[in-house]
Length: 195
Ligand code: ZN
Image (tube, rainbow, N blue to C red; front, top):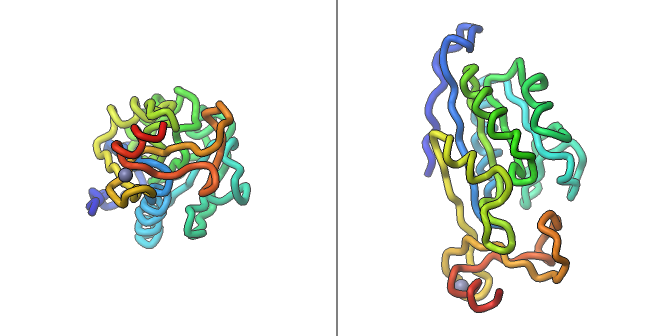
């Protein structure tokens, strides 16, 4: 279980101390968003000001909510490009970012600047696309983060620990936004066999 570092006593001048970056990554059905929501809810209970952003491309469910697969919804703000985030997050102590793999590469500098200005930045996203390749800005974000948590799904074929998102559809489009009918989590052995 990931133990969050503590934000120090707030004196209203968060610029005096540096923040940090946390990345939560894994395959489809690994519980990334649930883990993001768990951390954000704890910060919220502690009275910390937070905002959650997601790329506007992620329109599977309600427009303004981060919705995990267990429908544990938290309000979020859809943004077109990562560059919109700093202004919208100016008043926050904690910044959550969901579906980070769909953001542009500008997300890297945005997150580093937010952390440098004293904010806790928590990023959730797919580490690999359906082809097993690093996805969007995720590898760079993992490199600069203080804390990286890989969460895992269970292999649909054999029950082992899974970290590949195998796509069942034939459409050759990386941004295909799928649910249970489009993807299945597989372990390395089963993924190799099926791809
Ligand atoms: Zn397997």
